[in-house]
Length: 103
Image (cartoon, rainbow, N blue to C red; front, side, top):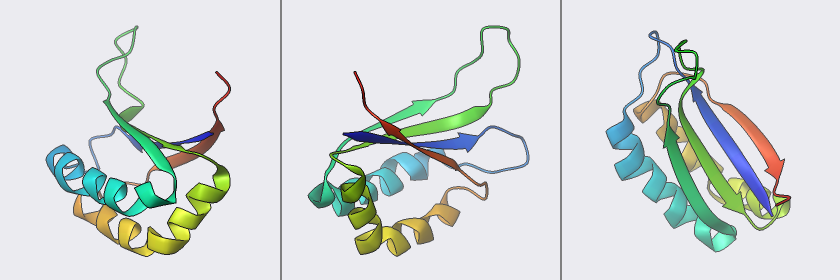
């Protein structure tokens, strides 16, 4: 099992429409990618850091897939549509990391 972590930086220069993201983009992901092995989606909104310094990431999405191949197949099938939707909620660049679930 893998988890794809998509992190949207928190800075004052980029826009991020959380309402659109939650009501349109996340349901689109689920609708298109569940048949390709997407088993769970969690969305985290940055709330603070222990020392009170500015957040590194405004929003983090955790996408769980059965395997790396499942994720690649989902991207091949619907990646263009998913990526074309991104400018509708942000003009920032996400940081993406693929993680093996070990526990």
